[in-house]
Length: 272
Image (tube, rainbow, N blue to C red; front, side, top):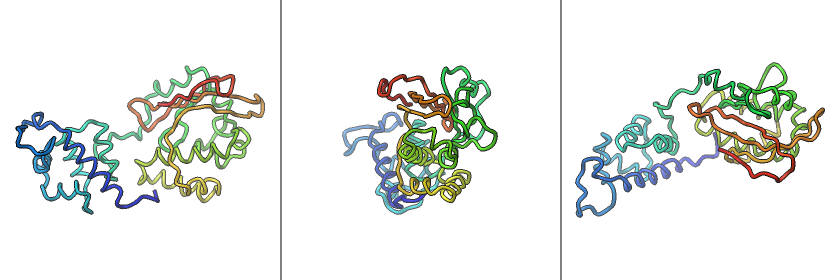
């Protein structure tokens, strides 16, 4: 993805590593924690020893110098410092590397997980990391004419930007489309090298001037719920409260539910 300052990852990584080092308890690593320590936490040489790295090389990283940090070295840091899953994920993210121990999420969740949409009272669907619908219920099929009621391509972005039905169905299409693109950019940051996502973005930029304009604004927003309004060709005006949740164990998959909301402004947004 474009628009990233080449120096930013090193600076972020250095700040994160220093904070990690300073909040570690030497005693937890079997090290003496006497009064002779001038700074809290571990010393740089202790981190280097625990992680099997050169003291000079680790010091350069923490100082934010322009040095190459491999995925293998990051793994040593994560194991040596006993990082939590969230800390490890963030470490690789700020370093701009893909974690070799990250579990594969290319397989679909089990059928019983996908089938949860059938038990939801209201339109509901599950998107994968490319925002392609992998499962939806009958209410969603009725609502999203041209997307979930037809054979063929099921990508949400392609529906919003390439299908004329979407412009009619989605109220305030322009602002919603802009936000959706910003949410997609944020969601796929960890997969910037994924050929399938690169192909999708390049294809949409070629086929939709609206998508290209939205993408080029470099907007980044977290996915969230909130009020959603539609002008359906047969059911008329429809208003929902959207709730969006990641599937536990399959973080690349997201369940979206549209719950009945009779009056605009009645409910607060809900997201997870």
